[in-house]
Length: 42
Image 1 (tube, rainbow, N blue to C red):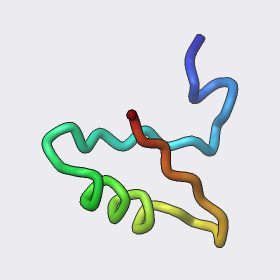
Image 2 (image 1 turned 90 degrees about the horizontal axis):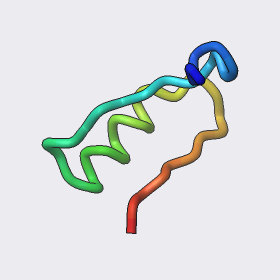
Image 3 (image 1 turned 90 degrees about the vertical axis):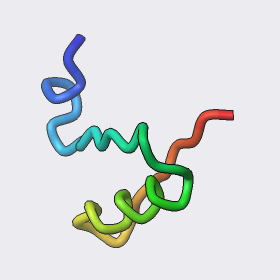
Image 4 (image 1 turned 60 degrees about the vertical axis):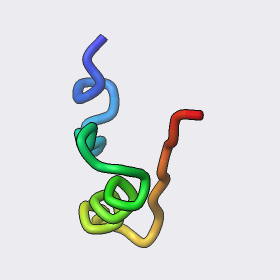
């Protein structure tokens, strides 16, 4: 299943060389609405 077909407004941001802070910052900069979600792996 392709995510962009089911959820066309979703952006996948690869920050595998960064850390939690850089990933969060990239997510904040990419958002185009007042609502956003940050997923972290534990």
